[in-house]
Amino acid sequence: MKRRKPNRPLKNEFTAVIERDGKWFIAYSPEIPGANGRGRTKAEARQSLAGAIALILDDRRRDGLRGVPRDAVRERVVVG
Image 1: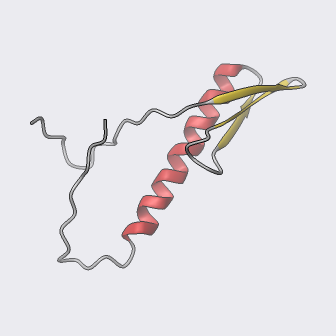
Image 2: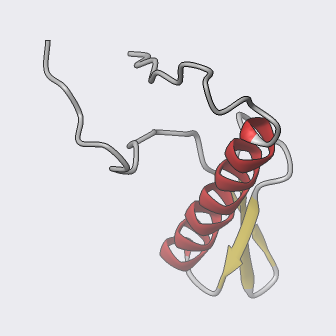
């Protein structure tokens, strides 16, 4: 089995739903509630969404690990 380097960011794929709203494109991901982005182009909206997803996942990870005992075992689980 291939092992990942420690502290290396995980790569994930999510659905981006992009809609036109006047001169703007708005984007959201149904898999990550609260993640949305916008831009003048679809590419800008998708990039903005990616940044929002990264922030939300990082916040959830930090919040979830808060209060975990130092001697608890932490392991990665790979899905897919």
